[in-house]
Image 1 (cartoon, helix red, strand yellow):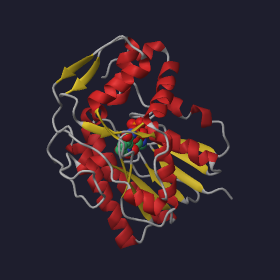
Image 2 (tube, rainbow, N blue to C red; image 1 turned 30 degrees about the vertical axis):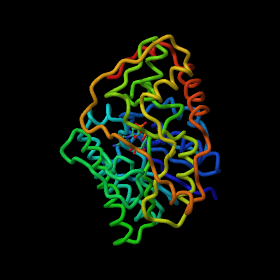
Image 3 (cartoon, helix red, strand yellow; image 1 turned 90 degrees about the vertical axis):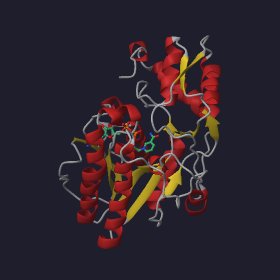
Image 4 (cartoon, rainbow, N blue to C red; image 1 turned 60 degrees about the horizontal axis):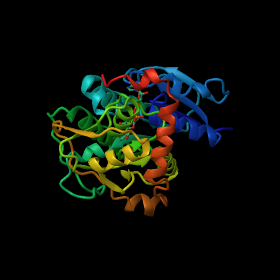
Length: 320
Ligand code: NAD
């Protein structure tokens, strides 16, 4: 019989790619989402499949799911700053109560659960690159604290369920990921740049653009999640692409790809914006045999192709 997996946040960017991967691997996939930042278009191609189910549900409320369950991937949570600054309480609730509910379900069903944490648990890191042993530098009362602290709590309660209830848990710390099905108006650097290029506007770089990020293509991330879920390692694992680039150089790469005749304008840096981000992926290499395969040039090309297929009215939608 097919293994049954629940994917919370299944209609979101990462969740929908996970649905595709696990359907492709022959699983029975149950996606759950309240659509607060997700989009049914991401999974509409799956809705008629016999081994796919969708539940419209808020995971901060009790989760009742009939039947057996082998695995849970807990990915429900607003993920981009523009979202979690707009819905800070929901962000804290889904990281806290949503994670608690998912862990309770894993315990009741004797399912293995993998929870989505983030490089944001490192805050504005004082250690570079970031290894899993680094405890982070987070401002709990800053604007980003609602997301960072929700995810730090998610990790804590997950370890508690592992240690006190013997639940099989996995924790992934995801670094910036990009690819098709990101939202053009989600405020993150890549879709913001591509949206501006498509509209023929200058690209906006915050600060002087010297702050660095590392961008992982979504297929690579999904493969890392798949390997971690099936591994026997319960401590956090970084998954991301260590190829680091300054935001200014990144804007220039996007300009070269889109061929736009536009320039770059600079705006003040938002509060608590991390200056450097780069994963140390030694653990992923050694424990999971994983490393990223899709280079930025190819990943950017695939992502740009996707954005071009969207109706042009969507290009003109400004960040909310
Ligand atoms: P997304 O906003 O596209 O997807 C999140 C999904 O969760 C959405 O479909 C949303 O409707 C759903 N959701 C939110 N609150 C919910 C609730 N209470 N009940 C049910 N569904 C709810 O974001 P994403 O980029 O796909 O991120 C998915 C997960 O990965 C998040 O947990 C995020 O913190 C984590 N993550 C993402 C990145 C990244 O680069 N995209 C980096 C680090 C961590």
